Image (tube, rainbow, N blue to C red; front, top):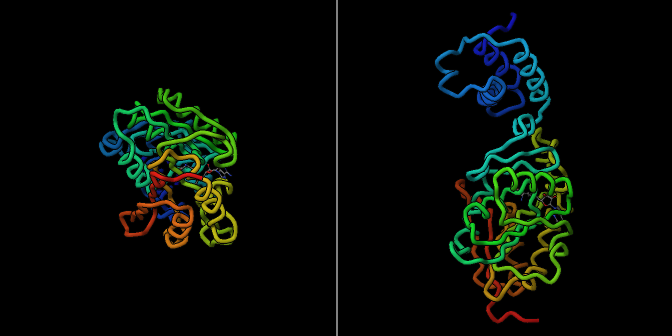
Length: 286
Ligand SMILES: C[S@@+](CC[C@H](N)C(=O)[O-])C[C@H]1O[C@@H](n2cnc3c(N)ncnc32)[C@H](O)[C@@H]1O
């Protein structure tokens, strides 16, 4: 059948990607609306609107890539996170909705009005740093990454959203900010084991492995960050971490070993342990 209308393309595209997507109808609709610059209402009112030749060509090209497993966020080079539309390329992890829990936990610990220093380690697209910068304009946020390409994406996102209270540093975890002290350190590190079967899913095959994999048990980055963090925190400062849902006991152990107190573990909407927050003791000293 020759495709002529939006509705025909939607039906065929949904069937074509049903095997690789959990949400084939939604994916097809998002691609169609982006290419044809239609909002939901316009599509609902005129589902059989004719497609132009160039729209059809672009849609077919995106559909082939989606059918091979490439995530919609990379196809459209954008992803919603918090209240921000972020530019994402294959140089940066696609921000996950789960990470908004980390942002909430961090915001609960950053006062609205004071000019506190906050650090986001491993910023990727800038998701966490930019959400914090938007919500806490008086805070000064430093965002780091070891990937220079990811930092370019994050910088572009800060510019696009006019957020001037964020600066960017390159380097390996806390080595990127030698001698600095923060009121809060947020971090969503890589925490997947190198042989985790989830790495074979369509989605993650397209994302930077540096952003996902952390040694043989997924704990390598957390083992480096947690012991080093107290020296980069002011007395009473907070470390807020995302981690795998089975990693809570190991993270808890590392936090106790590093002499953090007030250790709190948070669960996501599905009840899985995802984020831990820990306060460095007021009396912490070498
Ligand atoms: C799970 S991603 C998180 C990205 C972003 N913060 C988010 O939540 O969407 C982990 C990030 O840590 C960065 N990273 C990996 N190893 C690093 C290291 N040794 N030092 C600093 N950043 C690192 C990766 O490049 C990646 O951007």
